[in-house]
Amino acid sequence: MSMFWTIWISVITLGLIIGCYFLLRWCLSNQTGVEEGESMGHEFDGIIELNNQLPRWWTIMFYITIVWGFIYLALYPGLGAYEGLWKWRSSNQNVQSLEESAQAREQASANGYLVEYDRELDFAAEQFDPIFEAYAQIPVEELAKDPEANKVGKRLFLQNCSQCHGSDARGQNGGFPNLTDDDWLYGGSGAKIVETLTLGRSGLMPAQLPALGEQGIQEVANYVRSLSGLPDVDAELAEAGKARFMVCAACHGMDAKGNQMLGAPNLTDTTWLYGGSHRAVVETLTYGRNGVMPSFKKTLGDDKIHVVAAYVYSLSDE
Image (cartoon, rainbow, N blue to C red; front, side):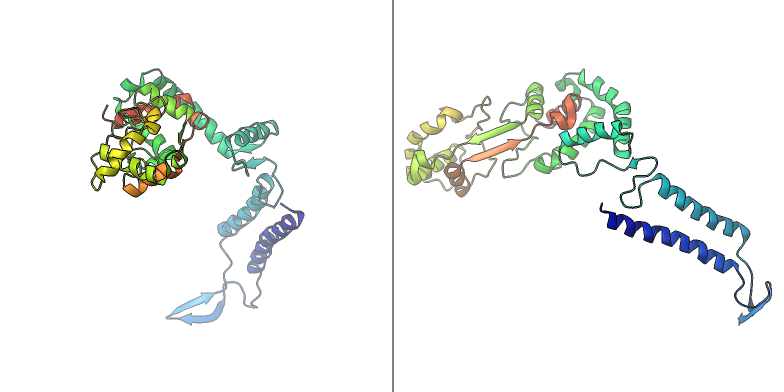
C-alpha cells in the first residue's frame, strides 16, 4: 500500500477515535447553564427531563473502548501499510498457486508473522491427519463400505470435484464423466481411481477431418451412432463408414469397445461424454477432443485421495 493511502487511513481512523474522546468530554461538561439535577424545561406527558450526567459505569466503558481502540491498532494491522506489533495477518495475500502459497508460508514463519489461515491449516492437520492416515491403511474397496469414511470422502468430493462432475457425481456433457455408473475410461478399480486422482488424465482425440474428409466424417458418424442403436442413422452411410472406421480402431478397437489403457471410450454403449447426436459426433470427429482431468496430488495429498477414491468407488455399480 502506498504512503498516501497509509497516511489517509491513519488520519481518518485515529482522528475518529480522538474525536470520540473529545465528544465524550464535551458531553460530560455542563454546557446548558442548568444546574445538575435541575429541570431542562422539557416536559412530555408528565415526564420531565432533568440535567443528569452519564452514569459513571457507562462513562468508564466509553473510556475503555477508546483505549482498546488504540491498543488494537497498535497490535494488529489496521493503519495502511503498518503491520502491527504482533505481525498478524488473516492470510498470505496475492498467492496464485500452491507453490506460491507454500513459499509464502515459509517466509511468514521465517519473518515471525502470525498468519491466521496458516494456523488454522496447522490445527486441522494436527486434528485430522491421523484420521486420514488410518483410512489410508484400508484398501479402497473395503473403505468404500465404511459410512463414516464415505461422509468424509463426500465432503472432499464436493469441495474439489463437484465443479466438473456435479454434486451428484453424474457428470455432464462436455467431457465430464458420470461417476455413478460402471462405465470407466481408464478403469474403475480402487487402484485406477487413485491413479486418476493422483496423476490426472489428459485425453486426446485427434481431429479426423484430414484423414477422412467431410464425406468420410459423415459416414463414420453414422456408423458409430449405429453401434449404439441410436435412431436417425443413414444405413447406407453407416455401411460405408464401417470400412473407414479402421482409422479409429487403433484406439477404440476393432469392436469399438474402447481401450482403458488409452482412455478410449466404448462406442457401442449409450454413454457419450460430448453428446451422441449426429451433430455432436460429427463435431468430435471433425475437430477432435482434448479432455483434461487435473492432478490432485498437491491439492489433497495421498491420504485424502485415498478417501475420495473410496467414495467414488462406492458410487459406481461395480
